[in-house]
Length: 183
Ligand code: M6P
Ligand code: ZN
Image 1 (cartoon, rainbow, N blue to C red):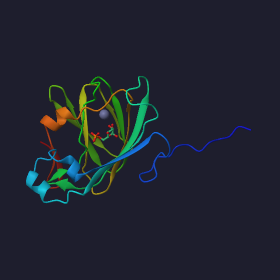
Image 2 (image 1 turned 60 degrees about the horizontal axis):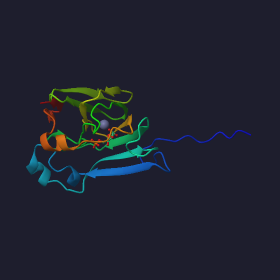
Image 3 (image 1 turned 90 degrees about the vertical axis):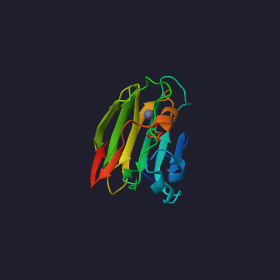
Image 4 (image 1 turned 90 degrees about the horizontal axis):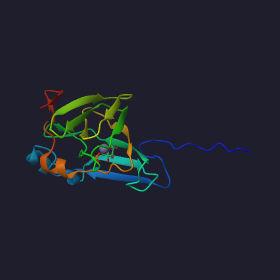
């Protein structure tokens, strides 16, 4: 007999399951320095959950030719009007590319090249995004509910957070009178 196996499933709380699965959570206290309004930040509970990432990493980090998959869920919220967002990164192997696609909720993918030129794409269920090499990427939740998106990237891409930690993105996504504005 040929056995037909159960597939891996992707949910927020009961994701891929088993070996190679990594879950990481980011609280406000892990995101110190990324939001502009430091006073608003200090007045919020540092234990506030901002986002979580469930990754399926079937091969060792750095493996050439492998591919990773992750689902990121960003809670709704803002710090002084600046939407909850991911840290954002360039890839350590800077020319490595990535796909993002929207699953649930509303958001914006913010992109920045090495010349610090910034552009952005709306995210919503079914939206699809190709992130070229040499482009930093960050996602903000602009909605009132959870934003979930999937991502797939090469297993030798790595994350370079330093550049963004030091200089940030050249533009920020702020709620101005209820409208998400890139300024
Ligand atoms: C996506 C992928 C991951 C990344 C995650 C959160 O799932 O790009 O590689 O870790 O988003 O983004 P960040 O690492 O910038 O916080
Ligand atoms: Zn990436």
